[in-house]
Length: 316
Image (cartoon, rainbow, N blue to C red; front, side):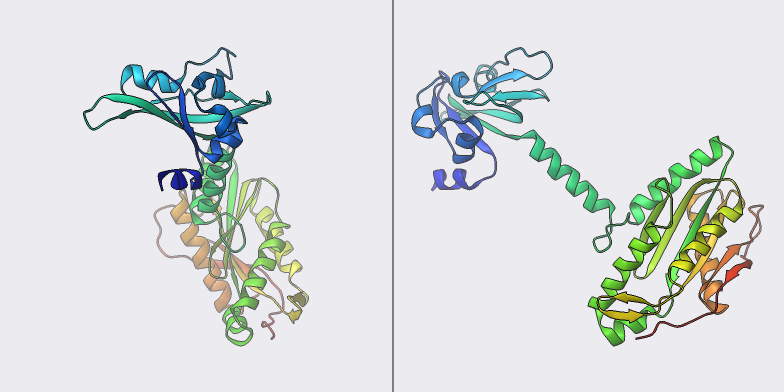
């Protein structure tokens, strides 16, 4: 049963006796070392598990022997390289631990290792998933906030402005209610791609949640730069579009807040852009509005219409 379990796990496992002779290796260890179990058993572990330092190219002492000598868990240094039986190099991550009998005596050691490149790929994938929206693959709120904070710092140091555009689709609920959530998801992915095509590589388009999107424009020279992007986005959706085989007319309402005029921190800028967006909706939708609040201790938000196209509702 123990052998079946060890053969089923994703890491390579080697077991050695107190003198460093191989007693066991699982199937993953066979694949990674290039040695079959029948050929490897009884050999010195250094012969099968031949490892050197990837930087100095010096041979590394067996972690199993180190674990036995020091009677404690040990790990290889980062960048350690395993030389397979066929001569190929494989960067690995490894740990070793002594094995004790029921009297507490050391009777061997176990080495557990895996491909460091695959581990890094998994970590990168998990990190990406934690920072991006699952539906559109756009940066999520967490990553947007991180980039917004960085953009504020850059704008302050370089004496530039930056802008935050808060977008909300008009009548999106009608799409979900009448055509189904699958169609709604197709529409959101389509909108995400179109908005992303309207900005620079240094800018960020984020899905804020539901049918809300945020555009972060870094280091702009003047407010009209933000207006140009808003006009560009509205123009992209000025005509009906095919979404998953259905023709839809998509419109949106946008609110714009500019740093430092409308806020000196991320929360204030986001709140003011959101408020300006709601005013755009109340004013007839399919338009963008600038926040006009000055950051001088005033309360409340007033907005000015920056541009407005003929309003049209989402058709089904």
